[in-house]
Structures are given as C-alpha cells and as structure tokens.
Image 1 (cartoon, each protein chain N blue to C red):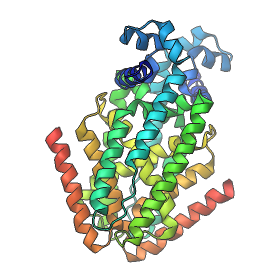
Image 2: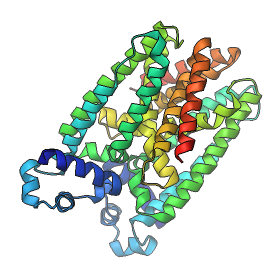
Image 3: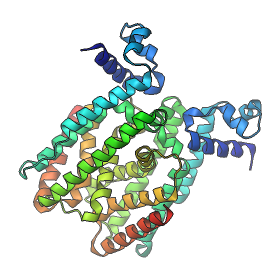
Length: 214
Length: 214
C-alpha cells in the first residue's frame, strides 16, 4: 500500500471512530507514526484527504452499481446491489454524519459531490425503468424520479438515522442488513404479483441476517 | 419576549444561517448587543442553548402532530400535517445538518432526542394504523413499523438532502412543499382505490405550490 493509500485508510478509520470534526491531520500522522511534514507532502490539508476519500468512495460506488440486465436475476441482483451500497455507506459513514458542514468548507469537494449525486440519480432512474420494463415493478412514469430521490434518501440516511436514534458509533452488519430491508420495503408496494412473493422472501432473508448478527 | 427567548430565537437564526459549528456564544451575544456575561447568566454554554432549542422544537412537534379522527378529513389532514412537519424541519434545519456531532457531545440532549424519537415513532405507527382502519391505506401489519421509519427518515432527511445536493443555505417554501410531495409518494402505492385519486390530487397541489414558489 502506498503512503497516500495508508493515509487515506487511516483517516477513514479515525473519522468513522471519532467523527471527522474531532480528528486533525496531526492525529492522523501520529496514528501512522509519521511526521506531520511527511503527511503534508502527500496531502496539504484535511480537505485534500477528504477529497481523496470521496474519490475512493465514488470509485467503489461505480463498480458496485451495475444495473441487472436479465429478468431472472433482477430481484436477487437488487438484494446484492443494496447490500453493496449499504456496506459502502457503512465503510464511509463519517462522511454522511456532517455532510452539509464538510461540503460548506470545500467548494471543490462540493462540486464533485453534486456531480456524483446527479449521476447516481440518473443511474437509479434507469434502474427503476428497467424494472418497470421487465414487469417486475409498476411505477407510474411521473413517479420514477421522485421515487429515486426517496431511495437515495433512505440509503444514504439510514446509517446516520440509526446512529442518532441508538447512540452508537460502531456500524454493525445488522444495521446494514436492516437498511437493505427498509429499502426493499420502498419497492415492495410497487411489485407486480409474482415479484411480490420474491421481495417478501428477500426482506425475510435480510431480516434474518440482521437478527443473526445482532 | 424574555431574554431567554430572545437568545433562543437569535441562536436558531444564526445556526441556520451559518451552521451551528461556526457560531459561538460570543457571536450570539454580539448579535443581540448583549454582554457574554449576561448570556451566560441565562445559558452556561452553547449546549444549554441547543437543549433549549430542542425543547421548543419538541413542543411545536407535539402541537402539530394530531392524528385525524374523522375519515372525511384524513387525507387533507395528512397534507396539512406534513406541511406543518416540513415547516418545522425548515425552521430548525441546522439541527439535522450535524445531528450525530451535536448529540455526541451532549449526553443529556442525546437522551432527550432518543426519547422524543421513540414517541414520534409510536405516534406515526398509531397514525398509520388509523389510516389502515379507515380503509384509506392497506399496509400489511408487519410493514407498519418499518414504513414509519422510512417516513421519519424522509421527513427529517429531506432538507439536508436538498441542501447538500443543491449547495444552498436558505430553505425556501418550495423545498418544503417538495418534501411534502416526496412523503405523500411514500403513502401513494398503499392507498386504496378511492384514496388513490385524492392522494394524486394532493401531490399535484403541493407540486404546484412548490413550482409557484421557485
């Protein structure tokens, strides 16, 4: 692992554990037994580290977010896609804890974030249309984009929601699986008859996973 | 207005405008042409002010959150309830921008918040059951509580979601009305036939309000 990557990984770990606000570049350097000067050689400030983390997050998101193309596997694909998304949100959860504050102090990151959010919305809209075309869902065309916003809100908001309601700092797999169940529930009332059974089974599957982990 | 109330109102205004993180008790005192000593006489620190704001927010929420009891007005009541909730979230939006951080540094506030969230969840669950009983909605009993969580997530997450996606600091009525539309959409697929038409009209009504304001 390069020094740059080590700094990124250590920062993610410390930000998630103690909150981004509490951690300075000096803490990160000390955690890595590295001089502050050496850290500054790679990243001029904390904002540059956070941009590096965001680029990594966006890259992971792109890799996971593959719209299923065959009808047979679409619903299982949906379960796996959501699991990947929640794992990703769990791994980078500090970012969503203070998002407005983090973005307010770094215009460059704010532009990166907004571009990525537009892309993600467009991907979700295509995904929902694909499910509609495959007769798995029946969402009226005019509701597709608002529904995509609700999906994004639930997926990105779930981890901070549970953290604040339960007062916990450690994101367990149980929390992530429950997030998958919450998101599947958004799809459920739109499912056409045969898919209804499959989605209910999927929800039970992830609910059972959440319970076995907690 | 008492000095205590003036401090609370000025703090809400400054926190919303500049973010809670950027504002100190000295900023608040200066904004009110008040000595820091006078402010400390009423509130020993910023945490005490935030607890005072939260108590006010909770009081407003309790007043607005009245479960409709007659079938005729339930759906219009839903629209009005959601509008009140979004106005409330708009008026206190700084709180949800950094919620995990704010709660992490004040155990007393965290306990107040978690108790209020439990109460709110229970109220929502009762509300959804009432809509089910009145044959407006048809949500399977096992989905009622997860659905209530999704509602809470959407209502509390909408303002920060729009702020971060659009990079804006000022919460307009248009944003709040769009939040009402997003939340009505969560109810829509569960609506029984006659209510389907009413909810579609309600969504159009709030969508039109949002467009006329933006």
